Structures are given as structure tokens and as C-alpha cells.
Image (cartoon, rainbow over all chains, first blue to last red; front, top):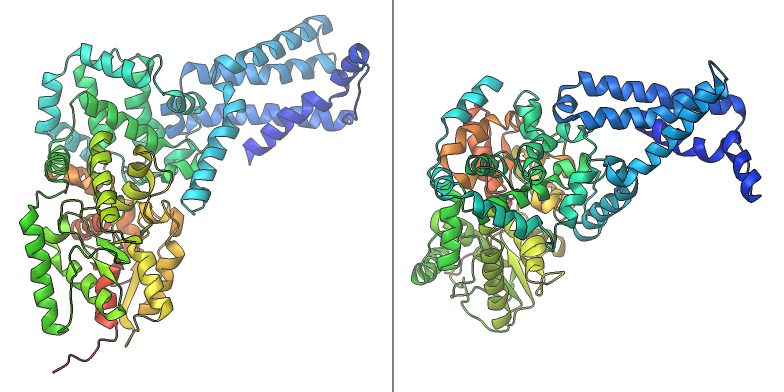
Length: 145
Length: 445
């Protein structure tokens, strides 16, 4: 449940956020429908709440804690950072310049980290999942979920 | 409970593991690493799996070993990989022989390769496959548990699992044929009949310990009027313990001779007895190692064969079995071939009082004996039985008297659990019940 909400908001938000689309329209002349401001706020809070949930789960649940390495916490931080800094920047809490810079930096760090860390699951998941699904469904004639 | 498992672990001495580790050098380990996972090796699938695992822990609830050992995280699928293959890869093969010994014990006795975890993983990471790779690495390092390695040697020397000599095989078949003729005078087990429609193959232990199953199969074939044969040469055994030690080369040789025997006899299909791992060997691993996407001669598992016999009316049922039964879903025929509905059809045809266990079908728990674990023998029996408490509870909860296990390993594993946990049940194969309740032709006087 939490991962569904998390991933959905995570992907939809950056693409359909007014603040981002405005910049693309400015640079490339393209634009597309955007999210209403309130909805964007709600989705951001959802992402941040889910990150907190994942953090707590990783600490409390024994079977997850056993598998956890420091990089798991770092990745969670890297993923949460663009949303936290974006939220602060949008609402212009504290110094706007600082927070928008942090937002841009954290966004870049997260994207750059994809090929080098477990965030690569974004790309690999489709393949590993569909491979197993085709093996189970097509060769083994059994459900794989 | 976790302490007992720990204590058992400390006390288990396996000569194969000890000797193998004693003879192992760090240089050999490094060489194996380079060969399997180094530059130029085909390790992409393994690396993708290991890199994609985000340590979410959802696989834990899938595994009977984890659940039976008080949810000890080190027995979760990801935990087992972390302790074995994961560490091996992280240190690029720079590990000690003692580590390889530990890795072999984990991969060979703490996982049955049942693939239930692959269903629970959101990415579909096949943890069973990863532990099979771990077994292969240990095999290449020469560190395997004693009993299963001895079985692999039997495969290597005699092409069957039980050191059955060629004349013993023929003798056993003719003995069962003779016994069968007392019940049905024109019963034949045609040996080496070229051009028959069906070649029937069995697992190694059947002629040695369970010849009645051969008797029953011969009886069914004769009543149903099937045009069948059995080989008189090595290649009759469809079982494959070499597969489970990671010895793919011997697996390939054993499967090749099995298919070549069927090809020599020019049969249309191979029907095999109620075995799980043998099916995996012909349908999933052995055929692919030899380069065949599908088995070159179609292989029909006993469950499907009984389904056909009952559906077509070639075997009729006189009176349904009265005792309350429940059905175990062996991993290799259900998660491995989707035969759960056909099995249920057969059970419903032959039994009056059938109750399901939960979870069932693809989600059924593993017997904890397959995957080569029961074949690691007496040193690990206690650990194995302790690691399947959930199964004991599951079957006891059905309140059934009879547990149907269409797989030899499951059958043996369940019997061990039933006696260890004092569950009031007996195990039976499908064929045993069919034989009891079927319509038998009148013996001609």
C-alpha cells in the first residue's frame, strides 16, 4: 500500500508540477497540463510521510533491519531530500535561495545516483519482474504472485 | 526454538564439508570466482539480482525456514543470500575455506529451492536461483555435504541415483511383472519395445525401496491398455541429485542419456512417476543445460497422466476412497508446471472427503525435504525437521487422516515431520489410492 502511493506520487509529481513545467516551457516552448497546487502539496506530503514510514519500518522490523546496510539509509535520504527541499522552497519558508539551490542539488544527486546504486531498480525491476512472470506464466503455467 | 536451531548448527559435523574445506585453497576459490562471476563470465543475471534487491524484506514471510525458526531474520531468503553468495560477491572471492563451508551448509540445507520467495519479491528476484549458484560455486570448490555428493557419484558412475546395477534393474522389473501376473495374468512390462507410444521412467529409489510403485504403474498401464515400454539399459532413471549439488555437467550427462534412451526406443512421449525434482530436471534445468528450450521428447508427469486416464475413462473408479484426505502441492509440479488443478481433479475423482490446506496451490509451503535437503542425510535431519514447523501445523490444521503427496521427496519429508511433531496422519501417493479404488478386471481363470 505504502509503496504504491509512494511510487505513484514520486513519479507523477516532478513531471506534472507547475514549477517544473514552467521552466521547460521557458526553455523549450513545450508545456503540458499541470497539477493543482493543493494536490501537489498533498502528494509531496505523502512522499515524505512514506519515507518516514520506510525509515521506521527499516529500523523496527527485524527481518528488514538484518538486511540493512548504511547505504539503505543514505538512499532513503537522497530520495526524500528533493521533496523536503522542494516543499520548503515552494512555500518560501526560511531563505528561498538556499532551499531552491539545495532542491536542485538534491534532485541532481538522486538522478545521478541511479546507475551507481540500488536506485537502479527503477530500470531493472521491469526486466527482472517480467522475466520471472514469463517463466512462471509461460513455461511453468503457474501464477507468480 | 532459535536456540535449539543454533545448538543443532554448532553440533552438526559433516565429513564431506569438513574434508572439502580442509583441502580447499584460497587460490582455488579465487579461480572459481573468476570463472563464474569474473570478467567474461555470464554473471549478468546474478549481478542484476544482487544489485536490484533493495533490502525490503518482503521475501521473509514466504520462506518456511524463516517462519519455522521463530522468524529469525538470518533464515529469510535475502538473509541467506547475504550470508552466502552476497558476501562472496562483495569480497570478490577473497574468502576463506571456512566461509565456503558455511556457504555450502547454508545453500544446501537451509533452502529447498522451492521458489516461493520469488513470488513474494516485488522485483521477482529468484532467490532460489541465487542459492543454486551458491551451491555450484561450492561444488566447484569441492565442498559439498557428504551424502548428497555420494548420490551425485552414483549418478556419475551408474547413471542412476541408487547404484542400481544393470541386471538388478531388469530383475526388479521382471519380479514385479511376475507378482503382477498373479493378479492379472496377461500383465506385461514390455522391455525395450521399439516404437511404443509411451516410455515410463522412474526415479532411482523406486526399484530399490518402492517397487510396489512400479507394480502399480504396470497395473494401471495394462488396465488402461496403454502402448508402453520401459528401457532395460541405463537411462531409465529420471532423477537428478547432481542438479542439486550444482554439478551441471553430470546433470547434463544423466538427462542426455535419459532422452537418448527414449529416442532410441522411438517413443512419442515419456511418462514419469510422481516425482517433483525429476520433473524439474527434465523440464527446467537439465534440458536447458543441454540446449533444449523444451524437452525434445514431451515429458508427462504422473499427475497429468492420471488426469488423462480418468478423464478419458481408461481407468474407472469402483468406489471412492472414504478416508478424509488433504493434498500437498509439491513445488516442482505446481510452481514448476501448474499441475495443481489437474491434481485436484484427480483427487476429487478418487476421494469422497477432500479438504484443502491453507495456503494451497502455488502458495503452498515447501515440504522442506526437496531441493536436495533430505539427500544431505542424517547429519542434517534434525535441522530440517525443526525448520518445517509451519508445515506440520498446516497439515494438522486440516484434520485429515491421509496426506496425499504426489512426490517422493515430499512423501519422505512429510513422514519425518509427521513422526517428529506427532501429527496423526499417514502419507500416500496418488497411485496408491487409485490402485485401491479403481475398477479391476476379473482375473481370467
